Length: 64
Image (cartoon, rainbow, N blue to C red; front, side, top):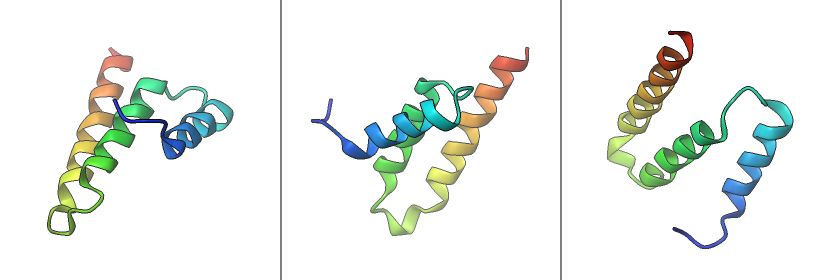
């Protein structure tokens, strides 16, 4: 686990304030995907695909 992460804290706070319907777990996963690939210029499509897959999985789980 990383040390205190102000960016993650800000994302989670914004989620609670403006998007209560979005689960914290989903925000954390999205954040981890972005952090993992933030400096990979050659692989910009990978985080987009992972984010799409994550959202699709979430939607499928919540609509069944």
